[in-house]
Length: 201
Image (cartoon, rainbow, N blue to C red):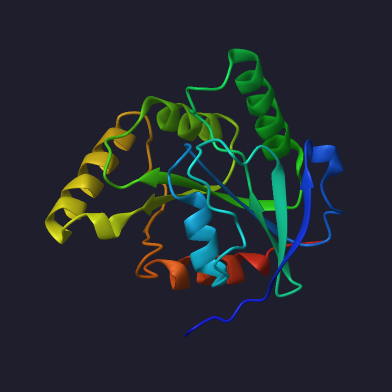
């Protein structure tokens, strides 16, 4: 189908109360530090420097809003699980993220990014459980799939689904992506386009 997107940076917010007016449907991207979130956002929007890629994990400390096609917001949330920040700063980030996810009423869905090369990490498990407990809609995004052979990827996916089934009755949707090859772009945008129809001002 080949979606063409225009993307405009709108604002960075330290708190959900500073976010733009909720006039458009909104989709958040979240994941552990260094999971490849900035690369994925740049791949989806086809803008190489839209979300700044940093070699320092934990660089995104604000809620970043981008307006896509003047129709919906893409939201880049702070990463979690970065060990080298202090406990008080981590708690503060967690509060900012939780408040945003629970109180932003135009948030249609969240994409939780996980590294396809790794078994389920404890903080990913906690995040996925928290979404379930709070009845929030989400999709799991496998990143960096190009770094695995098709056999390794298949095995990784089965292992992850098995781990999910240990605490999840019905499996959440999973989309395989690669920022390098563009895998998953159409699937993510198609989901957003169809979900936009459910948005009510």
